[in-house]
Length: 82
Image 1: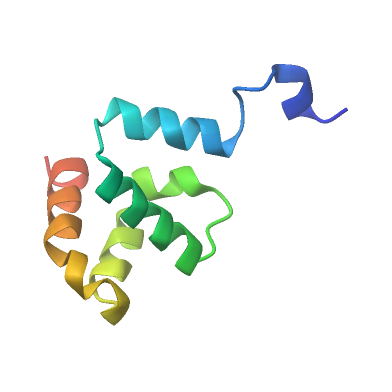
Image 2 (image 1 turned 180 degrees about the horizontal axis):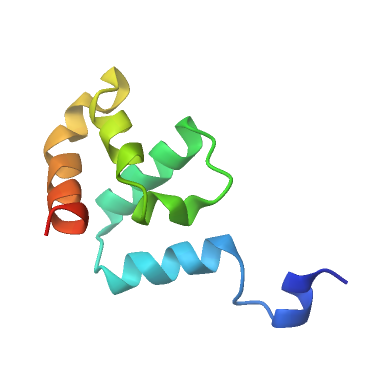
């Protein structure tokens, strides 16, 4: 049995990601945006998006996320510039 199996169901990347979204009071729109970024850049550790500002910067400069530029700037400001 792997380590995650020993620790219980709530442990792992997805539950931690969900917990961090809840902690930061992210709405559905922002959670979907973060999930799109995670999928696009094939992040092995989805929670990295909460601690690595370069991921949001990269998305900010990606044409695929142009419509979300204001949201990305706000997240960068709140999480990494305060």
